[in-house]
Image (tube, rainbow, N blue to C red; front, side, top):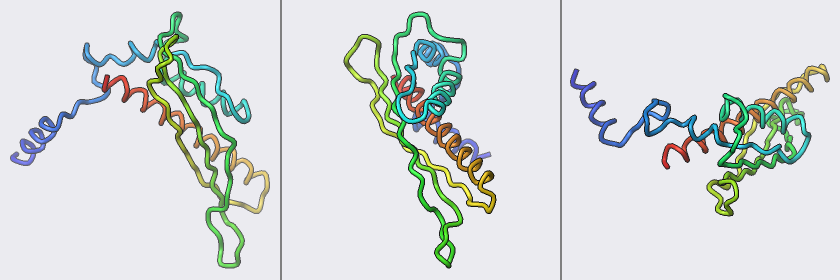
Length: 164
């Protein structure tokens, strides 16, 4: 009983506020539904489309805004693939995919940039004897990295609006 009371007082005293609790002060969909996400610039349009669609589903789940207030621009880098684990005989047994994305978030028609960050994501995959299976694992690792980048951007924007 005492532990629960102490935990409650500790959490209340540190300024903790649930990010997703709906109150009149933090209705985040009010802000995120006003974001226009520009087409992603960078390597291979397929992955740029996947990144953009993932963000559209998270930030504007009710559809494209008619009069956007904010603009999100993203540039996606070429994936960097390198050996991850090497066996004792010097042969790689897995690789890692690393992706970078640079994004800017600002109000439409305003030169003042609200968020300007470069983020990274990586995902390893195994090298198998079957070349097709290895290629599928590589593609899946890229998709996992894309989803990670999407989550990082989403949480940065949510945090911005929560702190605002």
